[in-house]
Length: 99
Length: 170
Image (tube, rainbow over all chains, first blue to last red; front, side, top):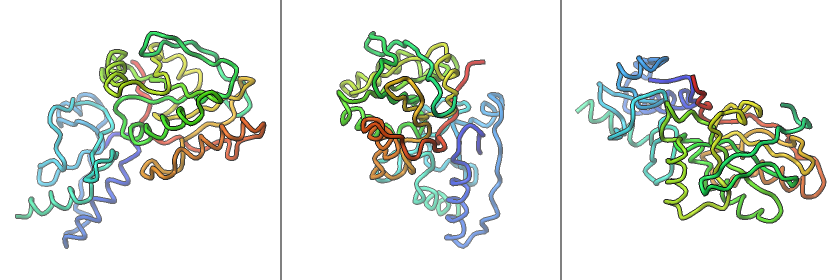
């Protein structure tokens, strides 16, 4: 799920496609959902762009983040801040969804 | 606002109650905020610039985001952040009316405007070419300040700002 106020959508999409391909899955099996309004955000429990869910489960879930039209802050496994999730977190979420 | 244009003057309150604006020396006016991942990724590099150029040039960090819809950018949240860090080497200013951001044409957080000693815009854009690479060390911003301090024109004078959109009030 993405919001136009953040420039990280393309990179997140690329990371997700790479992770799917790396696990032998179809990289085209990604549904892109644009979140345009506060109402959309509320309905989808969207806490920021990009939000990636695999089988409905959040990659790198964050407790207590407010719902809204935000850019999401991720922590990479090395501790640094990033607009996109750690590729290892995406891969792990895919594997958990498949198990 | 174009390169060479007179930068709009302003006076904004900082988290410590002091107020700051353009004062005639080379100044980097950086629109930033509390929760944008791009602003956070570049934050330490911007503070390092403020430390390294102390006494020669100033860095003013300006948060213009609408705090009604984004309470994590409120004046209280800004003050708590600075205090939690034990203080910053650059003032963190609140642009409550968003007039300064509007007058400068700020688009993102961060968005960097370097103003020369005569009050004219000398550089506008990103701090450096890669928010993911700390070794870039705000090279475009440093280059612009170095050029002004040497009496020269920055190169480049403009880059594309990269970050979260400024959160305008409704």
